[in-house]
Length: 329
Ligand SMILES: [Zn+2]
Picture 1 (tube, helix red, strand yellow):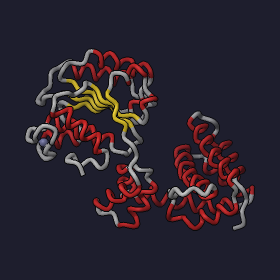
Picture 2 (picture 1 turned 90 degrees about the horizontal axis):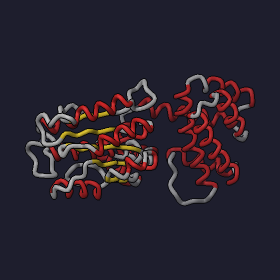
Picture 3 (picture 1 turned 135 degrees about the vertical axis):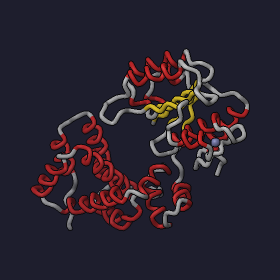
Picture 4 (picture 1 turned 60 degrees about the horizontal axis):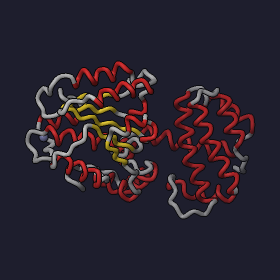
């Protein structure tokens, strides 16, 4: 592992260390990649590297008061911005806070650092507001943005940032990461598959028994629904649609399952996500042909999209379950 103890993304660590060591730091970095892949950890390490009192340039000690405060997001020269839990977007007022924060010199460290998480949550006017800040940033300012894709942001923002695109890690890498954190081998392997290459997400799952139980339940229910009559499916759909967020989570789990069935029917060599369900997926692939597996997978993706666009959840749940084939129990 690299000296920042960031798992994977060695090239990004190396590049940022070079920027620190050679004093070629940009004013703004955009770290992209799926949530849980390591964007925030990387940003925090960069912030620590710049402000740590003990370490050599580019090598934070991670034990001094400054390093600890930055890790916790509590340092006076660090401002962390993210969407408030009860809001739809990152608010323009939050972006105004950024320019206010940067209008004063650092309080105790060398740099004032702003970390904005999931900047795709900012609407166009908030993004435009940040643009002005980016253009007028003082020399002691460093902006660190994270987003799933650069393409979700205004081109004018992107052009002012150095972009670091973090890719999902391999299943083996995530397994190794989890094993290093004390997760037992079999569980580590399953979680690595479920995490789509996101070590942070996998680690979170490893301590979240509720999430794993929820997944097991939903996959068991999927099996039962495949053998269920029309009436039972409609009853289930009605219940499912009552809680939109839980409906959404259910769809995400089912989608991974249908994708696995699609992989199997297409004869692809890629490894399944739901490896603990290997046998039943293989059996299901005998009953479902490629065209059906493809249309079911696409159907689930469309349903998720429509749910986000506020189409009636009950209607979506009914249509989804009615599309599924009826199989012998
Ligand atoms: Zn330190």
